[in-house]
Image 1 (tube, rainbow, N blue to C red):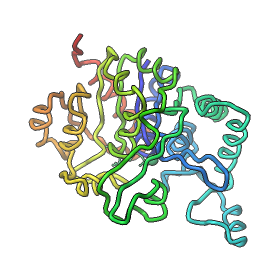
Image 2: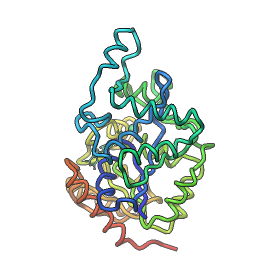
Image 3: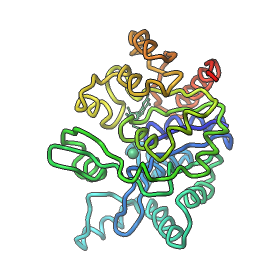
Length: 312
Ligand code: GDP
Ligand code: CA
């Protein structure tokens, strides 16, 4: 068994490669700090991006939603004066409606996510980081914003000074997640945003302790290539939080937690400084343009993890 930690786009791109190699020997533990309720529906953006991607149904242009979706619901909603800042495609709606139905009858998010993944034909296990509610909030000079308010409505166009994960410390690590971590032969941190995808996972209850107790190498792929994020606000957040936008910042952030970090060829000169953070470095092409790239990088990451001695 291999366990991966993932947010949305970067998480899904590496998970797609891991899933192709490992099938039902993979558990992907996914951030739910971005989740929110909209029009009465429970929306889980990162769970859905991972699910649609592993199902081969993701929209490659947007990084969210279902490929080939249509927008009749949104058009009608707009006609009726409903909120149109958050887009829900016609096909995508079915996922949210079933999630609503199943949660309402008492199923856990873990059960709901598993059932959806099965119906989408996915062999790997997709696991929410918690069944309890955790909400990422962003401290800005205009006050505290809900994550989707910051990310979608404001398009990250406001300077941040801090992040918080409301509910995380009292949220419980699901049994399935604890089991996946304990059984893992390697734990892979996908190239997800460290601040708003990986940090919320690490903040859940005793998640950090579970990860540290695992007798398995912990390796990450940096989401930063040549000082820039491939997509999204990771580099901008680093700068606003007072760091260089660099894979070295990723290494410093994960110091003590990782045995190894995979960085891009473009960042090869950073290797000695990253090694000085107490982790091994592997340098390769980390840009995943398609499924073949994802699979090649996943295989490289797994070989790297296997090569690392773990203490204890
Ligand atoms: P989000 O929830 O959609 O923001 O998804 P993640 O946090 O999982 O992914 C966002 C991060 O993925 C960004 O910081 C990107 O730089 C990174 N990312 C996206 N595609 C790639 C890729 O092909 N290679 C690498 N190394 N990072 C990527
Ligand atoms: Ca996300």
